[in-house]
Image (cartoon, rainbow, N blue to C red; front, top):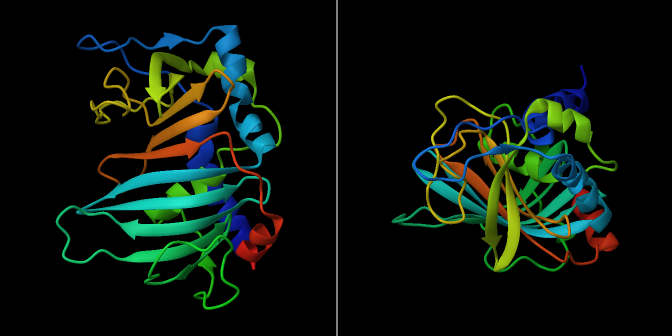
Length: 254
């Protein structure tokens, strides 16, 4: 089995939850009660990844909790080229030293400029990268997050009828970045811990993925419970999305 085939298989397993949200848990403690999708809501959710793909690019700020630490990714996603580029930094409260690495990745590989000293250049540097290694969601929580972010776009809509049959749920209205959005629950996981802070996944639903979608169909926030992580990985996406940089995308894939 080739490395690319193994990587695609791993990514498919990781994305299975993200692509077809399932039913959420029951109402609790005054939180919004997840409701089955209407046909119109299912159509809106089914178009989300296709809308992202048509937009082409996005800026993402993602926080990934790890056992005993926390990292933040500040990056640009090129959904048509299937690449990402940006800074991964340690954001562990109370840490004596905070590191920062410049990353570039695609669906199968990742490379880094370790201990990057400042902001990310507008375009990836031409040299100085570490040797590429396989992107492996099976063994790395950060790799899982990188793979999921590239998987938030598709070149065709998802199946709305399948979403309805899967039991995908609408949690309710929310606000992200001052904009009104609708929060949807992803796959349910019995006993999964929930976060109760503002702007975090609702305690009323115990699933493993969440989507916050605005009235234009743009994904403003995505959250997931990832293997090996003690909390929710949360990604805020900037929209309207900036134009893609073909030169930068080419450099990012090396």
